Length: 183
Image (cartoon, helix red, strand yellow):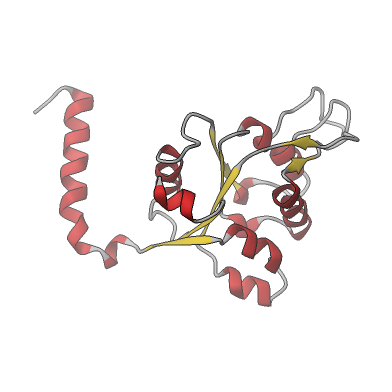
């Protein structure tokens, strides 16, 4: 929708764990001109420094010991759509560098490949970490921060939105009734 088309491609969702950051990312995707293309979510906290480039950008068979076949990678899976990077602050500095290159050049290079592949993805990143503090401490790249933070959404915890609890309850009841065929 309007929110997404007005504010560039980099969206950063800020909030505590459990505040629904991925739900908001999906909602942005589903209401954008990319809704007919894939939405691919990545938990950056679960990616090891060694495997992150392969997960994100793919790899060629034989490029490392366990690479028994070619792997597409998240960016190519989501081509034309959205990549949701949850807990983006957990990416290693080296992977942040590769991610920045992919965003700037709109190309990825699978591990073990000699050629780049053009990709068109929107990045929606989320974190519960203070990335500005991480920048000061040298754990997060400032240039990447500016690239993913063209527009930010702050998601307050439910304890700060007491008035929303009743609406959540009715929504949950209606959803359960629909799933169970009950009134």
